[in-house]
Length: 310
Image (cartoon, rainbow, N blue to C red):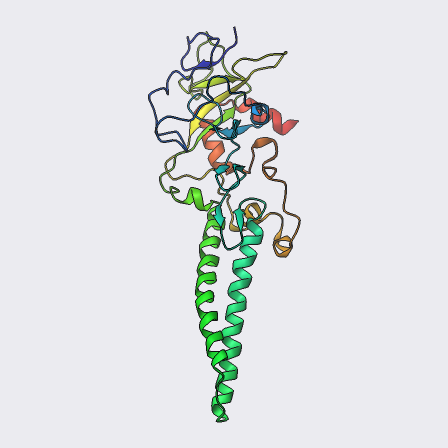
């Protein structure tokens, strides 16, 4: 029998996946307030291995990732299903009719360029036309009605693009998408963190800091073909904590726009979706928050020391 979950010292292994001490809890579910979406009977999502190769990923109460019934796949962190294009989109922000498509990880930089450059161009028009009109008025010349119309249009679109620039910049600073910002102050993220040294099921606690009451699951739930199961501890952030908000504004800009400062002005070179986090996750995590969650889950320090030495 394969091990699947453990919530206390004497929990026995089971053959099917369970999360024994969170069945009745809903607060920790990050995207589904009541019943999480799970694969229907006969569904065959094939991308679970992509998650198991990560150290941390967003999960539901059973320890498995979020699931999309339309795409029949496990949804990567920060992705959302877009009905306009009929698929899940990595770090989707919104569907924008102004640019004619989805604003997401691979197009967010270009959307930001559009609103920033648009705002700057409108400001340039307002200043230039105001100077020209002032000079003509001082010289006693008439002002063309087209110039007045230009100022009016530049003012309208300037207010719009400047507002979009400010709101988008605010999202970048917080490293959050438009969709997730709707509940940024109340959302609780539930994460599965790899625990390479789980305690034996029939053992006593190794130390007082090792929390055996934290739910642990072994994935994949039904290994085949010689697959090795990995243990993951299920943890939750505090309400309103964003696990992807990095320590500095510059780092959040790099994460959102891709690359260093000089690359933000380019029309190419956006990193591959979901590649920023490397082995630790789909995206970079807030290191202080993750360290705290690992400590709360009692993931043994020996593991981290060995990683440093290696």
